[in-house]
Amino acid sequence: MAAAEELPPIPNRIYFTIGDVSKLCGVQPHVLRYWEREFPQLGTVKRRGNRRYYQRKDVMVVRQIRSLLYDQQYTIAGARKRLSGEDMKEDTTQSMLVVKQLIVELEEVLHDLRT
Image (cartoon, rainbow, N blue to C red; front, side, top):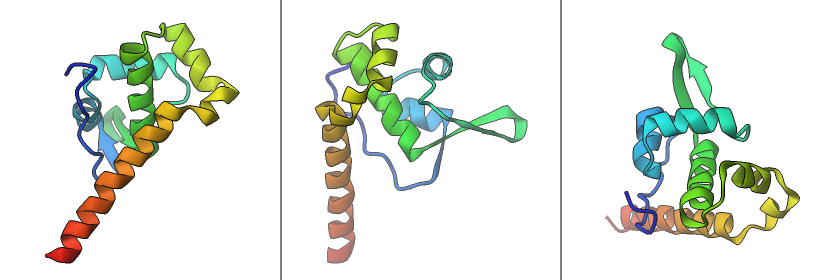
């Protein structure tokens, strides 16, 4: 998936498998496993059989990492620093991702209400 393409909306679920996150964020599972080691912000839960489960907030962090690395051309070290810095709280890219996701979810609710 190219960096400029729109990512699919995040379904309203509690947990996501590594395969789910791979599809939702447009990165391969091995990249996600690597990012888990490089970015302490990714707090995956490991359950039976050492399977990884991501929460919704983790999917948003993966999308932010993807944006920093692929769209904004940060290095791993630069992206790690950016994510851990205070300026992350004011990051408009993260805010835009959240707003887009909310719009999609609200449109789904509206569609359900109309049918």
